[in-house]
Image 1 (spheres, rainbow, N blue to C red):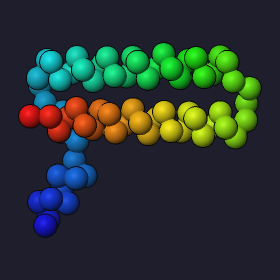
Image 2: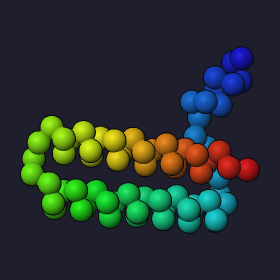
Image 3: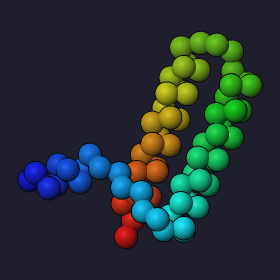
Image 4: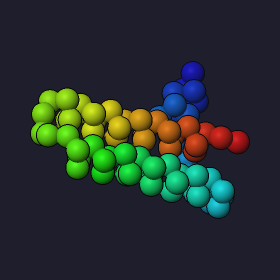
Length: 69
């Protein structure tokens, strides 16, 4: 159980070039969407929530990449 808990809380970045490339492409894609939101939405609660959810989705996407074997 302890090992499972440790694995769940650990995003290990390997030295794998392909994995690093996927992570960078993921960040670039989320950055483009974020730029669009920043430029096209008025400041509001909805804009703040959108940015928060994008940040969270990017984090989960990258974590998923780091767990690929």
